[in-house]
Length: 347
Ligand SMILES: NC(=O)c1ccc[n+]([C@@H]2O[C@H](COP(=O)([O-])OP(=O)(O)OC[C@H]3O[C@@H](n4cnc5c(N)ncnc54)[C@H](O)[C@@H]3O)[C@@H](O)[C@H]2O)c1
Image (cartoon, rainbow, N blue to C red; front, side, top):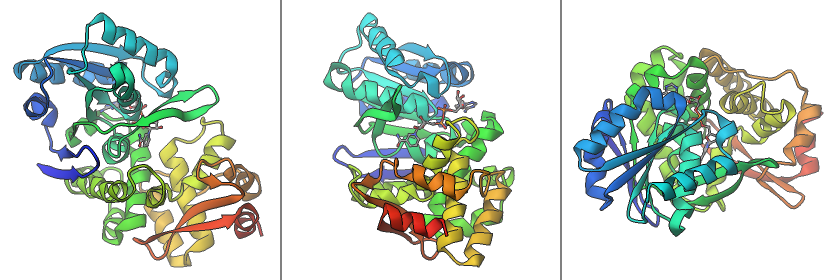
């Protein structure tokens, strides 16, 4: 087992171990006085893993209730959140009980937000079951729901009491979500770890899975280091957004339909590196993304995308911050005017 300790205001560990789902109760029991655990999950993950998690929690003395909602981003909203609150009330969940987020980033984000707000806050555990959730969304304490006006517009910082990552759970993940998570994994190599990036360049979507025991903890440790330095996202955390300035524009342009987030990030990283990096870096990054069935560009032109970058959350007044890797493994934040950003891309 690999342990990555996160030293935020409320410290917690991220444990990575194959088969940890079967013994999750053993790890959770010493961390809480809860009598009851409420598992929050989606229908896909429920069918695959909820019984295993329930059995282990019960073996370790918890009584267990479960709320299941339909999978997908469409459920990360206020309506489902209200249903979760109602479920917690009906089941007489108290402040000393514990929520268990079992699933991908959607489950993690909405459950974390429920834990931050129900009864003014209660404990929760993250059991992430997608690659993206294991390397990214379950660590760092950001929780949120979407509004009709935009993604992640309502949220809170709320750290879990522990994160339990089971790389074996990724064996059932559809290829498109595996590739999606690899977009973020490649990003970690680019921003902080040239060796990790080189390793990824020698693997592909199939072979990488045998290396997850090393790669997943490496990514989590990078995210840990960054969020420890900037827990509330005021500065350094921005480097996690490498590729995201253009990715957000791509997602907006295509109405969140054509590209998954990870594939938009991959295209965003390549397009950024084409403008700001060396030819060799650009070609290597493109080859790496292609090995994981990720796009290296999109059909929409830079003329069309760059104006949409102004809507990025990282904008401050008429200035825009974006991230470049100079060289691979060393992310740098640049602050420019919208006009300068436009001139960088649209020649
Ligand atoms: N909080 C953060 O810091 C943070 C960071 C990045 C992304 N996010 C959020 O994460 C969300 C995306 O997360 P995601 O990509 O995990 O999406 P997701 O939660 O929708 O999961 C993707 C799909 O995989 C299915 N699934 C999950 N685990 C599975 C498994 N082991 N086997 C088979 N199917 C499985 C789900 O049912 C779903 O259909 C977005 O809402 C995004 O805003 C949050």
